[in-house]
Length: 356
Ligand SMILES: [Zn+2]
Image (cartoon, rainbow, N blue to C red):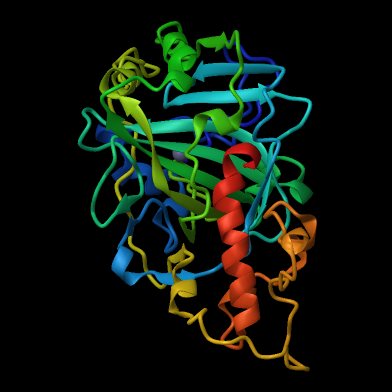
């Protein structure tokens, strides 16, 4: 992710709120990633991003559902800005989107979204999966609500979360990105902004499967490289055509050169463990076995046991947010809670298009 801009109050030339003096960096030569540590100590830290995620070396978990609010609300105003490092989307909305649940403790509020890409379709994403780079990556940046703004949140290890989505090339244009791509042509020069005629909701821009994701603790992927980010990398990619991705490569940096690539090389994983949120554990349970009477003394405060359709909670049900973080992966999980988890997950999949 990039810390180039925070919430834009008045979009236009030189109206960015910077996180300190982190604008003097680039992706090549003297300003390139291998030199960032000379000016920004954190860039040489032990918990940096991006990383390569080895899918055979992740810890599979069933985290509580992520809770997305305001993702389906079209903002009142949305602006697109070329900040010389990437293109940043900021929005003014009646309902500021928030995310909570999953690996997160507390509520995180939308700050901005931006992109990372490469010179051609064979690379461009920052995180890699099994040494594979995708052609582009979306970072939706949120700061922890209690820290009031993204700049202050940089001082806390749990200050930010980034929802990351990979892109893959499809034969057809993605219609949800049509206006976005058109506006890119108007912000080719650094520090130019454009306003959306029809602001998209966040839901319009992201993938549908929000259940399967990798998560780990890392950093900003641009200076000052602060190690304050809970990364949530969704498995399902977003599809764009080659021409749509190509439009990003026409943007120019602050020196007027084509911004053909803006991804940082992967950093050592170190002592970190990457979690993978999955429903796979459920498959290990024999659901055909006769259900015993619910034993007394078993902790049923993990996932509510559904006794009828009415009791199957949506992931957005606030009651689910009270559950402990790793409840579903507890070794004492009983069959009833497993059945509850299965039904809740099925509900998630089939209701996601309306609710997420
Ligand atoms: Zn980024």
